[in-house]
Image (cartoon, rainbow, N blue to C red; front, side, top):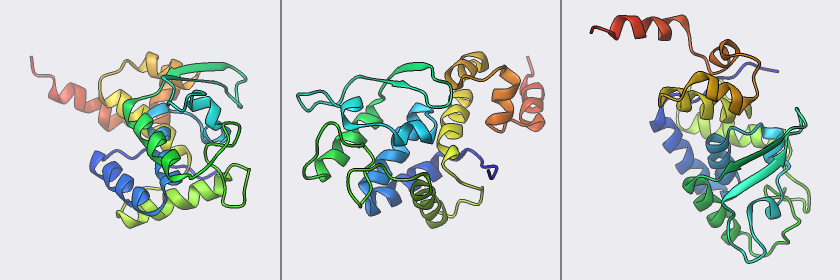
Length: 189
């Protein structure tokens, strides 16, 4: 597996949203839900419509899944940006069954494959001039990186990602020694 980076620049995130939204609402929704949930792409691609939408056609407040990698049950709230992306995407899908995959392939009743997600993300990253390596894992790393930059405790992020230690989480999101040194250099009390 190729090593990928989080998208650190919020302007690039917004630019990628515009590119994806303009080309494919499914890919836009995948991107928005991915960067706002921290789910692994394997779990994103396994979502069905019934995982995010009530029988009455409203986007749920929470998603509950069983993680493919860990087998653990995970429940988390859906952010307002993610809700809006899901609503807009499903409005574009003229008809669907709640049992269908959320991120359906063009071939029919199967979810898109990881490589399709990778291609969509890379096309958008290239379109906005993103130089870092981008892959499907970039979504999860971007979520964790921005949570950390917003001041969320690294042990909380560790728990969200199911990592073994805070140092694993720091390395995972690309926090370097230079980033850590900046804390000392800017702390002039």
